[in-house]
Amino acid sequence: MLWKIRTELADRPGALAELAARCGADDINILSLEVFTAESGAVDELVVSTGVGWSAEDLTALVAEAGCVRTTVRPCQADVLSDAPTRYLRAVLRLVEDPLSVDDVLEALQGFGEYTPAEWARADVLVEIAARLAERLQEPVIDGPRPGSGVPELRRASVADADAVVAMHERCSHESRTRRYHVPMPKLTTRTARHLSAPAGGVSIVAGIGESVVGMATAAPWEELGGTTMEVAVLVEDGWQGRGLGAQLLRQVIGAARDLGADRAVCVVQPENAAMLRTIEGLRMRTRVVHDGDNLMVTVALSPESLSHAVDRPSVQYGRSRAIPARSQSARPTGQPAREHTLAALSALQPVADRAGAVDLDGADRGDRP
Image (cartoon, rainbow, N blue to C red; front, side, top):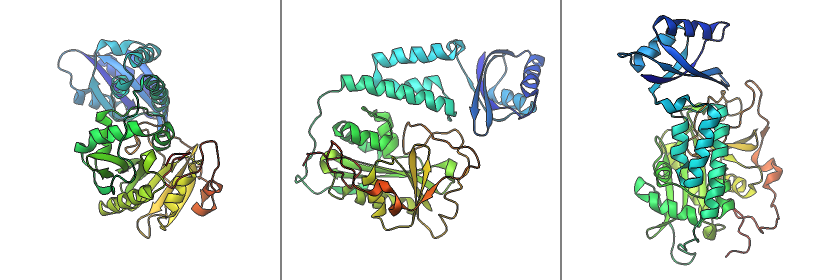
């Protein structure tokens, strides 16, 4: 039987040789090995062949005897024996046939619950490929509710809103989607929409007009930053931007996050997204802003003590952010302090004039739209 094992070896010379020796002693054949680099050290992924009677628990215990930690074991098929470049090229071929299958493609390639930085980088490229392919196949935009057709009702979202969230996403511009997800995301699958509508341990707020959704804010736990930290993100349909709807959604979802026990809300914002930064500032809550790679990490205090450790955050382990389905995890070397700013002091808060026109308070350029 074939098994895929992902584990972190002990940080000492000969650790891999010790693991190989233990496998050999139990007639376990190592068929392939791939080594990833993570902030916590080297992560090894092995494909092994065992005899009848071995279980995932048995293999976990065996590698633990060799000093390995954080081990995940799952059965696999022979196709995993292809080298990594071949597997990813096949994934691209599948995306050419069906760009919307990107979620399933990534799951088939990785299969474990956590990503290493190298896998995040590969996933980002595949998402970008899928986005560009889907843009070429994109159907004409279907008109949704327009301003003046009613007053949006803000309420807690559920999985029943998934189809309406997908429809809103399709009506949003490329710029609005990119600022929300940090990648183009031309298509949102129903599966991902369900995840965003009812995030595990978190909450989403939607702005609805009848059966349609015109705005959505999501707060989901960001375990790597602590059990009481939630990542928050907002998307407002283009025609409804500049009307204060994003600010209302942001305030309500932050309040809901506090009710769930969060003491910090974190927004990852592109530096040029001055409108979103002003929207956060409009909350009139204690905030702290640090540079984190190419983005700004804005922390909003939900309790008096919650900003005391907002800058010197723990090293982010390889893992998936919940509020943003697929984006690169920017990392800085362990122990390197992030540059701290006050929100009002950022030059990005000044209005940015460009070819798209004036900047809205909801985080997207309106151009000449009403």
